[in-house]
Length: 248
Image (cartoon, rainbow, N blue to C red; front, side):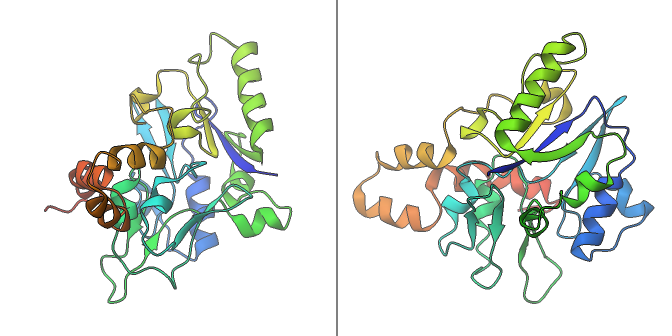
């Protein structure tokens, strides 16, 4: 079974129980001040973002064909058969190419540590393998976040839209975007209004990168692949730096 998370922003009340549960699961500090920081960081692997009177959740999207894993020259990031994109800190060399490759600007870096590592959600893989829901799912009081088989989560999302067409924007996010993701989202308005990237390709990003590299002489292509792909490294660097709150 391939696990997935369904987040329904129309049910989210902004209580941040998911944030608190995630922090507890990872052993990270959490208080009102941290909760008010509506951005991902090495100590906050999911966040609720206030969008007017609506709320949106940000976390690793666990792409079916993750660009972060494709960009990693040492395979520290890898897609599991169960759905989550996992991270092996022992393999990581701190190149941060995963951060520039991610279309959703998710991986965070421990900038304040002497031996820093990348941090990201792993969809509570160990809990799901034990037959438990993710910590955020267990904590959510309104079922804005639920977990289960990806096909069933997509079917549930489509059912909600069909049964309440006036309540939802008529699209299920994550079914096709960048080849599909293991986090499925519903909203009442177009997703870009809630902070998700607009105009994402349907094709998986690793395939997109390889096609771009095919136009480069072979010797340059090999070097570029080892660096994680020319396109996403160069095109997204400034955006990632802004998201991390750091200047070039």
